[in-house]
Amino acid sequence: QINTLHKLVLSIEQKVDNIPLVSNNGSSNIFAMQNLNELLETNEPFDLLLYAIETSNVYLIDSILQSYPHLNNEPTLCIGASIGSTYCATLIEDNINDILKSGDVERIISALGGLCNCYTRNDLENEKMKSFLYWIDCALQLELSNKQKAQVLVQKERILSGAGDIDAALLLAKEILQLNDEDSSYYYNYALLLKRKNTDETMSNAISAVKRMLEIDTINNENDDDHLQLAYQVLRNSDKQEDKNKAIECLKLLEKNSPVKATLAKRN
Image (cartoon, rainbow, N blue to C red; front, side, top):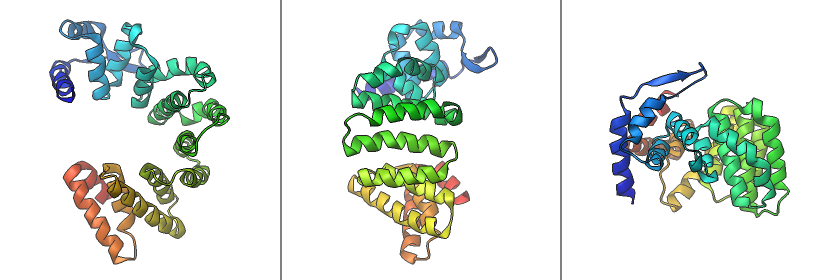
Protein backbone atom coordinates (compact mmCIF):
# COMPACT_ATOMS: atom_id res chain seq x y z
CA GLN A 1 0.00 0.00 0.00
CA ILE A 2 2.85 2.36 0.83
CA ASN A 3 4.57 1.59 -2.48
CA THR A 4 1.32 2.18 -4.33
CA LEU A 5 0.81 5.53 -2.61
CA HIS A 6 4.42 6.50 -3.35
CA LYS A 7 3.96 5.72 -7.05
CA LEU A 8 0.69 7.68 -7.08
CA VAL A 9 2.39 10.70 -5.47
CA LEU A 10 5.24 10.62 -7.99
CA SER A 11 2.82 10.30 -10.90
CA ILE A 12 0.68 13.23 -9.82
CA GLU A 13 3.72 15.28 -8.80
CA GLN A 14 4.99 15.22 -12.36
CA LYS A 15 1.69 16.66 -13.56
CA VAL A 16 1.51 19.30 -10.83
CA ASP A 17 5.05 20.64 -11.09
CA ASN A 18 4.34 22.99 -13.98
CA ILE A 19 0.86 24.12 -12.95
CA PRO A 20 0.80 27.87 -12.25
CA LEU A 21 -0.90 29.38 -9.23
CA VAL A 22 -3.40 32.21 -9.47
CA SER A 23 -4.41 34.86 -6.98
CA ASN A 24 -7.73 34.49 -5.17
CA ASN A 25 -8.94 38.03 -4.39
CA GLY A 26 -5.39 38.94 -3.44
CA SER A 27 -5.57 36.96 -0.20
CA SER A 28 -4.19 33.53 -1.06
CA ASN A 29 -3.04 31.34 -3.92
CA ILE A 30 -5.09 28.39 -5.14
CA PHE A 31 -4.99 26.21 -8.19
CA ALA A 32 -7.03 27.60 -11.05
CA MET A 33 -10.16 25.54 -11.69
CA GLN A 34 -9.07 24.68 -15.21
CA ASN A 35 -5.80 23.30 -13.83
CA LEU A 36 -7.64 21.21 -11.27
CA ASN A 37 -9.94 19.91 -14.01
CA GLU A 38 -6.88 19.01 -16.06
CA LEU A 39 -5.54 16.90 -13.20
CA LEU A 40 -8.94 15.29 -12.69
CA GLU A 41 -8.97 14.04 -16.29
CA THR A 42 -6.48 11.33 -15.28
CA ASN A 43 -6.84 11.18 -11.48
CA GLU A 44 -9.68 10.66 -9.04
CA PRO A 45 -10.43 13.51 -6.58
CA PHE A 46 -9.56 11.30 -3.61
CA ASP A 47 -6.21 10.35 -5.16
CA LEU A 48 -5.44 14.03 -5.70
CA LEU A 49 -6.40 14.72 -2.10
CA LEU A 50 -3.98 12.02 -0.91
CA TYR A 51 -1.26 13.59 -3.01
CA ALA A 52 -2.04 17.07 -1.65
CA ILE A 53 -1.86 15.80 1.93
CA GLU A 54 1.31 13.78 1.30
CA THR A 55 3.05 16.84 -0.14
CA SER A 56 1.49 19.36 2.30
CA ASN A 57 0.02 21.29 -0.62
CA VAL A 58 -2.51 23.54 1.13
CA TYR A 59 -3.63 25.21 -2.08
CA LEU A 60 -4.53 21.93 -3.73
CA ILE A 61 -6.21 20.62 -0.56
CA ASP A 62 -8.45 23.68 -0.42
CA SER A 63 -9.28 23.52 -4.12
CA ILE A 64 -10.27 19.85 -3.96
CA LEU A 65 -12.32 20.14 -0.78
CA GLN A 66 -14.16 23.20 -2.02
CA SER A 67 -14.93 21.48 -5.32
CA TYR A 68 -15.86 18.12 -3.75
CA PRO A 69 -17.62 18.76 -0.40
CA HIS A 70 -18.31 15.03 0.07
CA LEU A 71 -14.60 14.63 0.87
CA ASN A 72 -14.90 17.05 3.81
CA ASN A 73 -14.97 14.43 6.55
CA GLU A 74 -13.68 15.40 9.97
CA PRO A 75 -10.40 13.39 9.96
CA THR A 76 -9.47 14.92 6.61
CA LEU A 77 -10.28 18.41 7.87
CA CYS A 78 -8.09 17.86 10.93
CA ILE A 79 -5.19 16.74 8.72
CA GLY A 80 -5.73 19.69 6.37
CA ALA A 81 -5.82 22.14 9.27
CA SER A 82 -2.64 20.61 10.70
CA ILE A 83 -0.90 21.24 7.40
CA GLY A 84 -2.03 24.87 7.52
CA SER A 85 -5.37 25.06 5.72
CA THR A 86 -7.48 27.86 7.18
CA TYR A 87 -10.38 26.57 5.07
CA CYS A 88 -10.26 23.25 6.93
CA ALA A 89 -9.82 25.04 10.26
CA THR A 90 -12.92 27.16 9.62
CA LEU A 91 -15.01 24.05 8.98
CA ILE A 92 -13.74 22.50 12.22
CA GLU A 93 -14.52 25.71 14.10
CA ASP A 94 -18.06 25.64 12.72
CA ASN A 95 -18.53 22.21 14.27
CA ILE A 96 -16.34 22.54 17.39
CA ASN A 97 -19.25 22.78 19.85
CA ASP A 98 -20.67 19.47 18.63
CA ILE A 99 -17.21 17.92 18.78
CA LEU A 100 -16.76 19.04 22.38
CA LYS A 101 -20.26 17.88 23.37
CA SER A 102 -19.59 14.45 21.89
CA GLY A 103 -17.34 13.57 24.83
CA ASP A 104 -15.13 11.63 22.40
CA VAL A 105 -11.71 12.52 23.83
CA GLU A 106 -9.61 11.33 20.88
CA ARG A 107 -11.88 13.20 18.47
CA ILE A 108 -11.58 16.37 20.56
CA ILE A 109 -7.80 16.09 20.83
CA SER A 110 -7.53 15.61 17.07
CA ALA A 111 -9.65 18.70 16.38
CA LEU A 112 -7.76 20.87 18.88
CA GLY A 113 -4.43 19.67 17.50
CA GLY A 114 -5.44 20.49 13.94
CA LEU A 115 -6.64 23.95 14.92
CA CYS A 116 -3.52 24.69 16.96
CA ASN A 117 -1.24 23.65 14.09
CA CYS A 118 -3.18 25.86 11.69
CA TYR A 119 -3.08 28.87 13.99
CA THR A 120 0.65 28.59 14.67
CA ARG A 121 1.47 28.02 10.99
CA ASN A 122 -0.50 31.10 9.96
CA ASP A 123 0.45 33.43 12.86
CA LEU A 124 -3.12 33.46 14.13
CA GLU A 125 -2.31 32.75 17.79
CA ASN A 126 -3.35 36.13 19.17
CA GLU A 127 -6.42 36.40 16.97
CA LYS A 128 -7.69 32.94 17.95
CA MET A 129 -6.38 32.83 21.52
CA LYS A 130 -9.58 33.62 23.43
CA SER A 131 -11.80 31.11 21.67
CA PHE A 132 -9.11 28.43 21.59
CA LEU A 133 -8.44 28.66 25.33
CA TYR A 134 -12.18 28.37 25.94
CA TRP A 135 -12.29 25.14 23.92
CA ILE A 136 -9.28 23.86 25.87
CA ASP A 137 -11.08 24.57 29.16
CA CYS A 138 -14.16 22.72 27.89
CA ALA A 139 -12.03 19.70 27.02
CA LEU A 140 -10.34 19.72 30.43
CA GLN A 141 -13.74 19.38 32.11
CA LEU A 142 -14.07 15.89 30.66
CA GLU A 143 -12.88 12.77 32.45
CA LEU A 144 -9.35 12.45 31.12
CA SER A 145 -6.43 10.17 31.83
CA ASN A 146 -3.13 11.87 32.65
CA LYS A 147 -1.86 11.18 29.12
CA GLN A 148 -5.00 12.63 27.57
CA LYS A 149 -4.82 15.70 29.78
CA ALA A 150 -1.22 16.18 28.68
CA GLN A 151 -2.33 15.94 25.03
CA VAL A 152 -4.88 18.69 25.61
CA LEU A 153 -2.56 20.93 27.62
CA VAL A 154 0.24 20.71 25.07
CA GLN A 155 -2.03 22.49 22.57
CA LYS A 156 -2.50 25.30 25.09
CA GLU A 157 1.25 25.40 25.67
CA ARG A 158 1.92 25.64 21.94
CA ILE A 159 -0.48 28.49 21.28
CA LEU A 160 0.84 30.45 24.27
CA SER A 161 4.39 29.86 23.08
CA GLY A 162 3.45 30.98 19.58
CA ALA A 163 1.95 34.16 21.02
CA GLY A 164 5.20 34.86 22.88
CA ASP A 165 4.03 34.10 26.43
CA ILE A 166 7.07 31.97 27.26
CA ASP A 167 6.66 32.04 31.05
CA ALA A 168 3.10 30.71 30.91
CA ALA A 169 4.11 28.11 28.33
CA LEU A 170 7.00 26.96 30.55
CA LEU A 171 4.68 26.44 33.52
CA LEU A 172 2.44 24.32 31.33
CA ALA A 173 5.39 22.37 29.95
CA LYS A 174 6.39 21.41 33.49
CA GLU A 175 2.83 20.35 34.29
CA ILE A 176 2.67 18.27 31.12
CA LEU A 177 5.86 16.42 32.04
CA GLN A 178 4.39 15.62 35.45
CA LEU A 179 1.40 14.09 33.68
CA ASN A 180 3.45 12.16 31.11
CA ASP A 181 7.22 11.92 31.31
CA GLU A 182 7.53 9.20 28.67
CA ASP A 183 6.94 11.28 25.56
CA SER A 184 10.12 12.76 24.12
CA SER A 185 8.19 15.47 22.27
CA TYR A 186 7.19 16.99 25.61
CA TYR A 187 10.85 17.23 26.62
CA TYR A 188 11.57 18.76 23.23
CA ASN A 189 8.92 21.45 23.78
CA TYR A 190 10.20 22.12 27.29
CA ALA A 191 13.84 22.38 26.18
CA LEU A 192 12.89 24.63 23.28
CA LEU A 193 11.13 27.04 25.65
CA LEU A 194 14.07 26.97 28.07
CA LYS A 195 16.44 27.76 25.20
CA ARG A 196 14.26 30.69 24.17
CA LYS A 197 14.40 32.02 27.75
CA ASN A 198 18.21 31.74 27.51
CA THR A 199 19.46 32.27 31.06
CA ASP A 200 22.16 30.25 32.81
CA GLU A 201 19.52 28.42 34.85
CA THR A 202 17.21 27.67 31.93
CA MET A 203 20.05 26.47 29.71
CA SER A 204 21.20 24.11 32.46
CA ASN A 205 17.67 22.73 32.66
CA ALA A 206 17.54 22.53 28.86
CA ILE A 207 20.62 20.28 28.89
CA SER A 208 18.89 17.88 31.27
CA ALA A 209 15.71 17.98 29.19
CA VAL A 210 17.37 17.18 25.85
CA LYS A 211 19.39 14.36 27.42
CA ARG A 212 16.17 12.80 28.68
CA MET A 213 14.59 13.40 25.27
CA LEU A 214 17.44 11.58 23.52
CA GLU A 215 17.26 8.76 26.06
CA ILE A 216 13.56 8.19 25.27
CA ASP A 217 14.23 8.39 21.52
CA THR A 218 16.96 5.76 21.88
CA ILE A 219 14.62 3.46 23.80
CA ASN A 220 12.01 3.87 21.06
CA ASN A 221 14.65 3.52 18.31
CA GLU A 222 13.82 6.95 16.90
CA ASN A 223 16.02 9.68 15.44
CA ASP A 224 13.85 12.76 15.02
CA ASP A 225 15.62 15.48 13.02
CA ASP A 226 14.18 18.34 15.08
CA HIS A 227 15.18 16.59 18.29
CA LEU A 228 18.73 16.06 17.04
CA GLN A 229 18.97 19.67 15.91
CA LEU A 230 17.88 21.06 19.27
CA ALA A 231 20.05 18.59 21.20
CA TYR A 232 23.12 19.69 19.24
CA GLN A 233 22.40 23.38 19.79
CA VAL A 234 21.89 22.92 23.53
CA LEU A 235 24.58 20.35 24.35
CA ARG A 236 27.39 22.06 22.43
CA ASN A 237 27.25 24.92 24.96
CA SER A 238 27.59 22.63 27.99
CA ASP A 239 30.65 22.89 30.23
CA LYS A 240 30.91 19.10 30.34
CA GLN A 241 32.97 17.33 27.70
CA GLU A 242 30.63 14.35 27.65
CA ASP A 243 27.78 16.68 26.65
CA LYS A 244 29.92 18.26 23.94
CA ASN A 245 30.74 14.78 22.63
CA LYS A 246 27.04 13.93 22.58
CA ALA A 247 26.40 17.14 20.65
CA ILE A 248 28.88 16.07 17.97
CA GLU A 249 27.22 12.65 17.83
CA CYS A 250 23.82 14.31 17.30
CA LEU A 251 25.24 16.53 14.57
CA LYS A 252 26.68 13.55 12.69
CA LEU A 253 23.31 11.80 12.79
CA LEU A 254 21.60 14.97 11.65
CA GLU A 255 24.04 15.44 8.76
CA LYS A 256 23.17 11.94 7.65
CA ASN A 257 19.39 12.42 7.97
CA SER A 258 19.01 16.07 6.98
CA PRO A 259 22.05 18.01 5.74
CA VAL A 260 20.00 21.21 5.48
CA LYS A 261 18.93 21.09 9.13
CA ALA A 262 22.47 20.22 10.13
CA THR A 263 23.76 23.34 8.37
CA LEU A 264 21.08 25.48 10.03
CA ALA A 265 21.91 23.97 13.43
CA LYS A 266 25.56 24.98 13.08
CA ARG A 267 24.61 28.54 12.12
CA ASN A 268 22.25 29.13 15.06
